[in-house]
Image 1 (cartoon, rainbow over the protein chains, first blue to last red):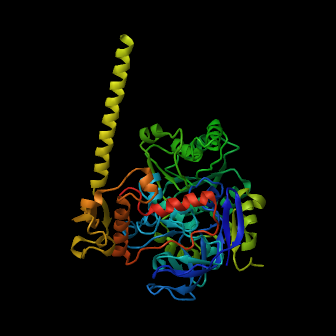
Image 2 (cartoon, rainbow over the protein chains, first blue to last red; image 1 turned 120 degrees about the vertical axis):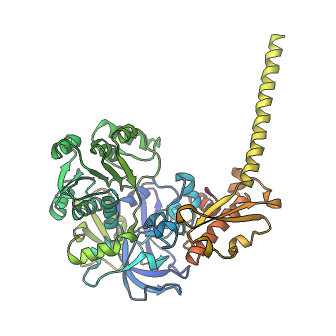
Image 3 (tube, chains in turn blue, orange; image 1 turned 30 degrees about the vertical axis):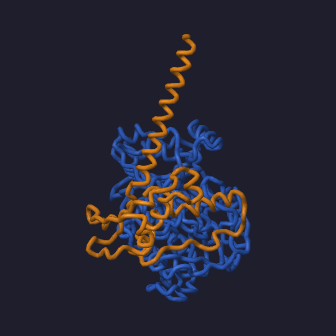
Length: 394
Length: 152
């Protein structure tokens, strides 16, 4: 079959790879209908995520049709149209049982790597390095889905493929930021990043009762999309002082909840950004925490900061003093998608959550390297490129 | 005379340091080999059955104990090397070459936990990749050891 492979730093190509096979009784094989580029893929494409091998298939946000079912699968059958959670959860370890699915104890087959890096290992994610389980990714004609009873979800008939696709990762990630960030009715929420995850976090905050949601980015088309489709206010950080703007918008208090949806390759304007960029390029630190710092400084006293963006290692000049002295709650997580996906599909079906607008481009699998180039460099206003192994829709 | 005294003091100091370090290493190695390695299995102690197969295979080299985990978090399943099992290196070369005796114990504990909780041990996709490069071979070596490494 054909698949999009990582061949080296900033090097992708479509290759012939062996078809996936059922490796465990609880696996299914999914014929991929659609997948999408994700900002977190850019970190591994750019070489910031360790333990990639040339030939690794990337992609983790997808939906498709089940074409083969293992003998231990109880909830699915051949022909089911399913959206698959990007993180694999066994459903029965303590973490899965407590709705902390991305922390699954039993899905990462290479636990020693991330235990050495982070103390304990998270669960596996499709197409996201051998440190994160080494599973093949979804930018392929077929993909194996382990523990499918827990990670694959039937798509309601009335929801189209592209709308459902974002329930695989970006919508639950965003929802988790608002939910576990503790958004309550009446809150003012600030979201850093107007990509798909940031927009979903903003919409989630509104649906959870936030009175005012403000999103921060620098790309005019993303800011406009956020205003038009999400209904949030926006700040272009290249044109104003974000902290001052947020103070003015919040009666001087600062936002109650700050959600960072940017990650380790954050951009900015000030000297701290230049410092971060220089240190990262010299490999003196692994991540650029520019947006996290700003979120911590901007958050109101006693407020909450949630880190949704992906980080891999250590950062410099982390404002621990602000965190401690302002009494902030800081939380982060890879996404516990199984906790939210059925509810999100239901909301998409009811029209409460709009996701389709995120798909600014649709391309075939053969065009996937071009799709990532467009996505990375925000060419032609690309927010998300949908990749269809069966060929792009007309 | 003064120079000879300083030289003797330096030699004695370095020697004492070396001895202390070697003793400390030997003690640390013994400590490493005798330490309990533990996983918590998400089933209550009363539902915990016989020693699961991955650990039973090592029964001549390990001792096993279980205890209820606090807060209803299941059962703590612990194993440690004993007798002849406590031979072999624990340094970087032994770990990279797959000769650290703790590696099969960690692997068996993880497999036992997964079998009890889910009924299977998740296998990685195969083949892991389609191209052989020097960097890929290094990652391959690390992943071959990864199921027996880490912090249990």
